[in-house]
Amino acid sequence: MEPKECPFCKSEKIIKAGFRFNHTTKKQRWKCSSCRRFFTVEDGFFKMKHKREVITSCLDLYMNGMSLRKIKNHFNQFSEYPISHQSILNWIKRYAIMLKPFTESFDLELSKIYHTDEIFVRCNKQQHYFWDIIDRDTRYLVATHYSIKRDSKSAKILFLKVKHKPLTLFSDGLQGYKKAYRKVWGSKRRSQDKLNYIRLKADKDKRNNIIERIQGTIRERVKVMRSFKNQESAKLILDLFVIYYNCLRIHQGIGKTPLEQAGINLNLGKNKWLDLIYNANQKTI
Image (cartoon, rainbow, N blue to C red; front, side, top):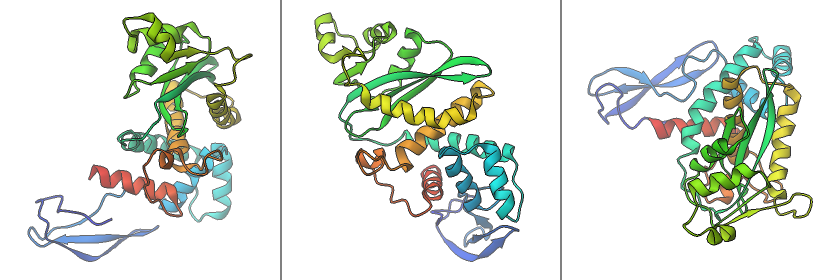
């Protein structure tokens, strides 16, 4: 990652000046010809004790279904520096906060034919809900929302997160979706809403199977942890899983990631997590 300007004096006259070493890796050091100060580029791993490859490997293993303690046991067998399960959780929270604004800034090419549904997740011995909307053609998760209740207010918050009004919206028979649609996207004539908003009966109409398949993928990740400990960590873990699903995971139905299907190619290399973090930092520098 090459800096565009000096972080101190904003001069563009910068040159390479060797490397900065620590006990895990080395980083390129830069010198400003104007103020003569040395600096390194923030690459998303500032003050991190472990190697970038170890951190990104832990993120990928967790998103693929391994528990925190199983990842810890695995790396403690083969890594020179021990890892705690709390460190892995801290990395998940950190990069969920870092990557979410970047992944939400894309200008996507969507069909605007959306499917919406919700699943329940256990958190601190209570039943909470995770709402999501998916685009039919790209399989891109357009918006998600985590809530305690399963009502029209939660559905409304989900719809408000969608940037563009859908051409057609499919949902199950939950009454809250109908109320939320009327408040957010409803037209003056209810007859027009019947054309744009379609409620499906799951036992008779299978058109909502697209999002049901996505819910199965989310359940596959959630079921191994049995229950979230608190609402804050639950939101961040699910946020990072959505980023993993949209940007990094190859969808078997379309043969590419939903982000690529939506017209955005980040040209990620072999270590996709590492390149995604680099791209997010270049966007914010």
